[in-house]
Length: 344
Ligand code: ATP
Ligand code: LTN
Image 1 (cartoon, protein in one colour):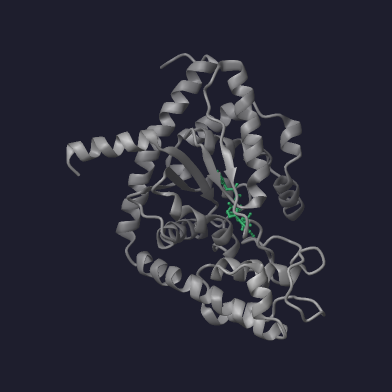
Image 2: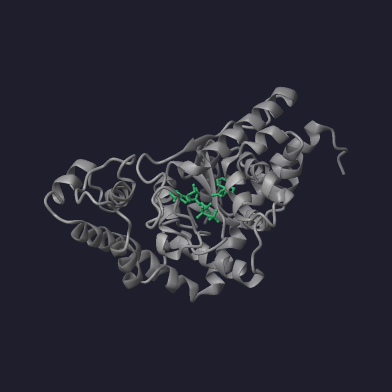
């Protein structure tokens, strides 16, 4: 880029509103993370200045195998790009490569209340699942997440419905901090899709589809082979009514499949009900499986292609960390000054 073009890009980025979101590279990405979050990210790049992070620091709140964590992180960089996030238009980076996140997180720990953290659903769920490792990081996790968001002065945080409570806590912490020190942080809004905000497990449709779920049949992975995806959909739990009809309360399994089908094909619930009127669940489940296979196929193929080019991926996350650090370091400097730390 020529000097003038660089200047123009910087000007544009300064005027655009900011977006920050992240996903933990704690396992293979699921259809839930794709439909609830990643799918919505690519379309935002023209209108917003977007930062998408691999939240590796968050993953160690639950024990990880080091080599697996590295592998998942690299695969996730490739999956972000394969899902349509152009690294020229989006800043893609690894959280631990930008030390400012940890620097701000400590400060925010001191402005986040024990009672607030105790109310977090994710903390309660994860402590129940990891009863032998309820560590302090698991508890203060939302303060690090608040740092991730506030450090970029983000306007919008595109996430699935399960993260709404954390974004609200982030706003409360920012409001508390601003109340003491003046307008330091911008207050972010969550951006949650209407359909696909909460994709449920295929085997127990009253709980969220999650990559750390022990039951692999409930969870469809973004990079899974078509035959495995089909098998999981064919075995998905439904009910005994044999009618494709949207009613999340009394028909959670069928309603979940309808949501997935609706997002994958762009059809409304009414259209789906009409399409399968008079058909058994067998046809319906196969159709949902096929739609998901076609939705994910190009992403899987592109991810595999990108993973063969490690040097390219390294270049992407290095450049991302540099761009991210420039913004993040400014916020930390401002916060350190506000709280009274002596400048070095
Ligand atoms: P873990 O099992 O490690 O907690 P997870 O599978 O729940 O992970 P995250 O990495 O926590 O997924 O979430 C990544 C993003 O995807 C978040 O924005 C989250 O809200 C969204 N998301 C995750 N699971 C779902 C789901 N089942 N439905 C909709 N959105 C989801
Ligand atoms: N807590 C999120 C991951 C995450 C995140 C963030 C999302 C970490 N930092 C900042 C949005 C913004 C999760 O578990 N899905």
